[in-house]
Image (cartoon, rainbow, N blue to C red; front, side, top):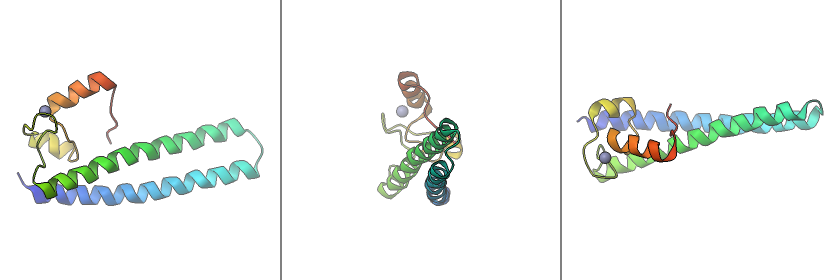
Length: 119
Ligand SMILES: [Zn+2]
């Protein structure tokens, strides 16, 4: 397994998520100001605003997983399932390099708690 390639992918992903997070928070604030200035249809503005924050929250979840994955690279445990320590298939790591679980446990967790956010 080419760890340095995954590390590169994860570092790029981390940077992209940071940029997006900063932008989302900013646009959320701007909408808040717009709402205050224009006392028109407040409910529409509220909806748009909450959508922004939901997206930001989703990004924050993935950002946390990306950072955890980078930590596992440092620890030398990258590519091992958090639950059983078994190998995560390279195909799966190519698709979702920050995943902490093998496909079997990911499916078990999704079945238990509903779908988890992916990009
Ligand atoms: Zn597993």
